[in-house]
Image 1 (cartoon, rainbow, N blue to C red):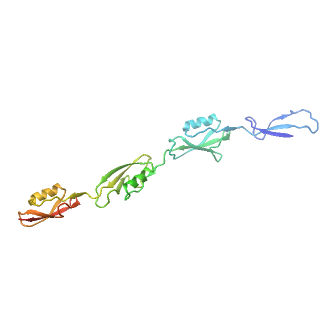
Image 2: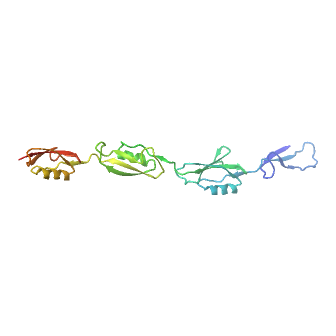
Length: 240
């Protein structure tokens, strides 16, 4: 007896497809009877499903005499939502061939993964920009005076650290300009009212005023030309 195997669409695996010579033929002792045994249906080539929509995946598999099994989703940075990222069958990723009718499990893209805004408060503006843009987020910068945070350091972000954003969303950085400094004007020789008006125009507030009533200002504390924070008090000294 000689046995060979071949695929068959019609005959179940393990059963004889045909034989030679046929039944009823008389043979001499020692002659050979040949059997061809079914391997079952021939394997189907699995189509390339990458980046195909769910509807296209179904059509492609049906055309290959395969079927869609389960569908799931996962984040992907390059493939649009709803398109195939990968597929599996029989424990194998992207198998090249499968038996007819095999169900193929398909993984569809859910789009880019959400981003978590990093905590960059206290970092330099350059470092904060780098940390955020590396995540695929955009950055805008606004500045604000601060008497407690050095110039160029991030005071706050909007949204704050830990917030979840989509790729391409924008994070606003609020960056310190340092303290809002103004220069004490020279008010020597002015009347008290004139000096008070000059200080107000410079963003300062007149403090104590010492000296004879009706006298003219001859000095201030802090002195003229000193850099102080806006809104600081400046004492006046008068003499006749």
